[in-house]
Amino acid sequence: MHGSTNETDCLIIGGGIMGLTLASLIKEFNSSIKVDLYEKLQGVGLESSEALNNAGTGHAGYCELNYTPMGKDGKIKIKKALEINSKYEITLQYWSYLSNKYKSFDPKNFIHRTPHISLVFGDDNIRFLKKRYLLLKKHHLFKSIIFSQNRKEISKWANLTMIGRGSHQKVAATIVKEGADIDFGAATNALLKTLKHKKDFEIHLNDEIVKIKESKNNLWEVSVRNNISREMKKTFAKFIFIGAGGQAIRLLQKTGIHEQKGYGGFPVSGQWLVCSNQNIVSQHNAKVYGMAPSGSPPMSVPHFDLRIIKGKKTLLFGPYAGFTFKFLKTGSYLDLIKSLKLKNFFPMIYVLLHNWKLFHYLIRESFQSKHDRINLLKTFYPEAKEKDWSIKIAGQRVQIIKPNSLISGKLEFGTEVIISKNKKLAALLGASPGASVAVDSMIKVIEQCFSEKLSNSEFKKKIKEMIPSYGQNLITNKKLLKRIRLSSHKTLGLKD
Ligand SMILES: Cc1cc2nc3c(=O)[nH]c(=O)nc-3n(C[C@H](O)[C@H](O)[C@H](O)COP(=O)(O)OP(=O)(O)OC[C@H]3O[C@@H](n4cnc5c(N)ncnc54)[C@H](O)[C@@H]3O)c2cc1C
Image (cartoon, rainbow, N blue to C red; front, side, top):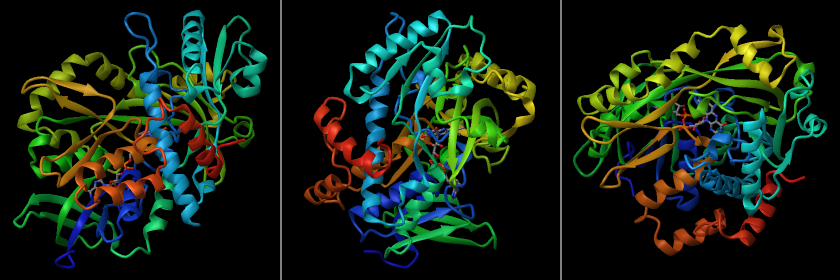
């Protein structure tokens, strides 16, 4: 199947949740496909997938108000929440399959049942939340959602958000009790454990991909630099997946494929407030999402979250978005400048000019003091004290700048998989809803790029074993959803 030792069937760039998910899926489908994964750092799951670099929310649309926007007609649109919820269920099914198959893939190490709450203040926001609740409640994906304007009840759900709050302030909340907190870094490492002893799988740590070019014999020629010895080597691959997080856009540009022309990246940094007082931490048991401040990007919706990292409870507030030039936390301040090319120059300038307010917001936010950050925290937790909180740098998000024409572009807040015409290269761009829907994103890569290798009937049989809802629609199939959830939520400990 493979000509020489430095030739592989599938070369994956990046040891984050995406890269490891793709490697795991491929080896589960067909163990004879040779997979080589390259990671520039000393371990996997250390960039955006690392626990404190992201918010660890199992994005299911339960509490994220930006997934149910209000249209210009005043109607709330729930389509995005339904789609994200059903994609998240695909991740849970796959994890459930792996948990049943491998002892080392222990869900207790990375996923914990944590209620998802939306909390709002003031008449307009309460009206919005109630309307949203009534729409979602009718759908089987959200049937367990509860709404309340009763302070005593909300106190039971999230006591810290209510103590010290003035009685004049009107509040409302919804809760979905079977939400989850996920340590995506631990999940990434758990995926690696299932792969480590598999034949024809190799992981190359501290190895950074610096160049990719098409060579003869339909292969990719890839230059790799070892970040410890600084030695360079060449390797060849039939297929490449670029799962390099924020750096994916720069690597994609190196390939020269037509499909990447005009694309650019808009980096957004993040900060958290992390609570160091265990007495406070022990009093909070939920993820509480609010409304994004007006003019702010969707990824800066503030939330007040219980996190469970390596078995220890942590309390996090944020993220505070800001402007940065870096594409990775471990990246370079030259990343943005170096990503400017002739083909994306005008689309990037166009996006900058048309999103001036957002750009201004991010720069202003970058200069906020800790005191300002505590003031925002107080809208969630009125009794917060500065001494109990410290600032921690979160991961980077690189939003997609998509070309509309040679001179204009659009800023996208989702994710996109770019696939070359010959299906020999795929790359994942963007960051949201990200890790929670990694399995769905990577199955799409496999469907498009490995169709020859995974002969249809074999593929369908195996994928049904791994993801029982595959090929069916959980948004429309109520019975199927019930059956799937009963099983996967039980395996993963998300049921009562
Ligand atoms: C502040 C913040 C909050 C978030 N909150 C959530 C959330 O609550 N829920 C959720 O589902 N998602 C969330 N996300 C998104 C989520 O973190 C990402 O979608 C996900 O981690 C991306 O995984 P990845 O594997 O693509 O990237 P990463 O985890 O960043 O992995 C990419 C890897 O590629 C490596 N790499 C880069 N360049 C090279 C190279 N040239 N050669 C070799 N290796 C290379 C990097 O070192 C890195 O390890 C959040 C993100 C941020 C920043």
